[in-house]
Length: 332
Image 1 (cartoon, rainbow, N blue to C red):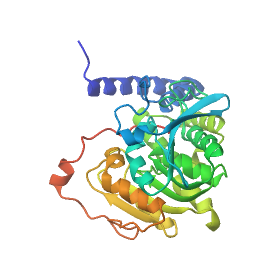
Image 2: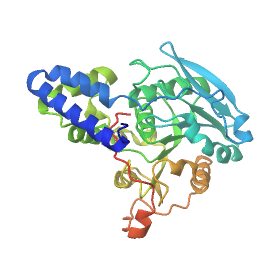
Image 3: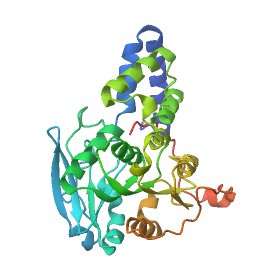
């Protein structure tokens, strides 16, 4: 008999918790290796379509594919138009196809659009840790490799975990950007680790060794991979103009950390939507128009600003939002 998805997920989680409980007592190093594998594992990868942009409007098909190398691995993407460059960066388990709705509004503003699949995502090669594994730092280095080909950015538009990747790239000098749009950004890896510990019941001994493995894998301590902490280390002249777009009903990445980020970032703006969730926000025409105006140095009419506190929404509106998903404690 087929096991329902939710029930199967619960069973898998229970088995993992039991294994890690034993490992924490007897073999924490082995438990940390397992936890790393599970944490950094990407969702099932579908074979790329014949055209990366199959099924999209004809205007978006009039782009050009490109390929760059990152440590001997191919990062593949598409570019459209001419003018100042805007990079589109997908999130954990995403692909450039999710960002295609943003292409036309940016082209209308006379901007060149460059989008790519990170290693182990979409049509690009497997990353350093295999076909089913990646992390936010590797995605940031993919952006660096693409930017080395196309040059400094008028703007970078990044979704979800891609937001952490691009802010890290700016902080560490891999990328120069005048403007930055973060769509549904997570707070960072420390909060995701806390979620992973709760989900898998990680003990202290296993957690300590997992932290060591993450540092060896990425070159960063987990505590460094926090959006607010990275932003705080940017010098004033390094701070791009910032627009954050986040849905109040996002079930995967909470809205509140975006409010804190905007309050801490001088001059930043917050555009809050309601009912679009974590992914549909990328395809919303009003969001696309606001992102394009911001990239073109024009004012954006935000529904809420960083100094505002979102009011509680009516229960019927919350019920009409996208189906609830259990947040995944992914690492990128």
